[in-house]
Length: 203
Image 1 (spheres, rainbow, N blue to C red):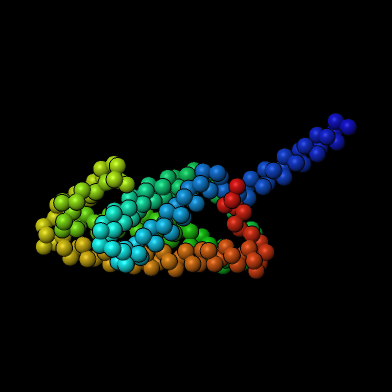
Image 2: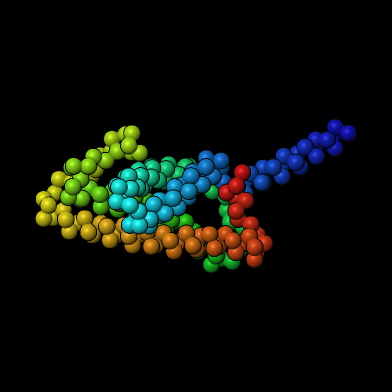
């Protein structure tokens, strides 16, 4: 009786361990969904700024900046966590090209999670009126601009402001494309292939 009970317990424990190994860790899940929601919210804020009443534009842009800096910090935390905690492997029955594409897409998403906030920060630091409008994190914590850029001569800084703004815009377009591919791929595996990858990122 004891042998059979121990066997069932060992089998159940093995199943639970295998299930855990097929999922991301809880901190990785939390960071993933928080960053995803913040980035989507920031996209909405960025796209809606031009259509808002004039007295709304500055608060919305300031919130957009604060969310971007928050995403940058969380993305760095997520990268450090990923380096120290190996993510679960993709199912072996996925075609090799799909696994390679998933790895490339994840790498590019990490680059964008860093590149978009940084380009926005550089764009804001090159703003000619930056000195008259101090930057703060959600209106609570004073946040510095990049001094190396902010202290440049205005003749140099103004062209940089336009260039950093264009870079920020194009990185935004790249994010739209990658998010569409990322979500589309997950839904394809969920509904067409019947091999859910969503459960890897859901408790």
